[in-house]
Length: 247
Ligand SMILES: C[S@@+](CC[C@H](N)C(=O)[O-])C[C@H]1O[C@@H](n2cnc3c(N)ncnc32)[C@H](O)[C@@H]1O
View 1 (tube, rainbow, N blue to C red):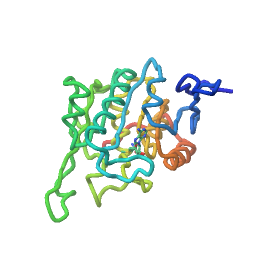
View 2: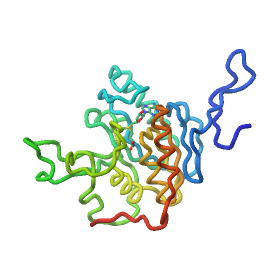
View 3: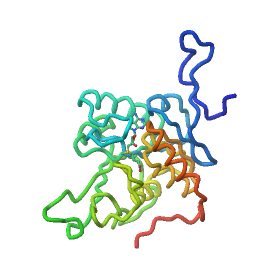
View 4: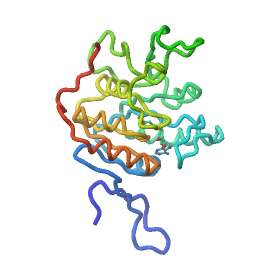
């Protein structure tokens, strides 16, 4: 029997009396995870108060197993237009961690009202034998939920190289928990369900759960879904006590 979170992806295929039903790979009181292409799932979601934070595949040749991360550029941009259109339909406020290479295209797809938030790190910490990029950007149309002068100060993220100290679960495109937590705290509307089309290791889902929020994720690679299920099924202590620290 179907559960409330099963998704009927299509009418009955030829020769079958039953529609295709997509069941969650993992579900708990906060998280629903689908092992599927997000373009199969997003069109079926209708949520009154939804916020999206995602770090999509960048089409730079990372090994995501079942997903080709080096498509012809036109195919990649078509794919982006498809999932971004669905996210925009579903979520009034959105924050995306775009690839630097396709920043202009993402900005155009999202809209000129989106702001660019620059996450920076100190040059003395990041240099190893030469100059490197010292910032990455987020694109968002979300209103800040609090007034804070130094919201992004001293953020832990991948560009810190040697100095980055978070567990990455061996995933080639892991997103920093620190960035994710700050985005959720700064931008997510109260009571919103967090939508994560590209769950990866489940950082967004896990951080949402720690903050007592509901979240829905999609991930094409079943091995990553297993990782997410293991991560999200851990006991959660002190849900109410997860404010961002600016130490
Ligand atoms: C940059 S990673 C996401 C990182 C994630 N925020 C984390 O912290 O691990 C992108 C992920 O999207 C997945 N992916 C790629 N295309 C997808 C699609 N069409 N639908 C769902 N997941 C997809 C990849 O397998 C990969 O794990």
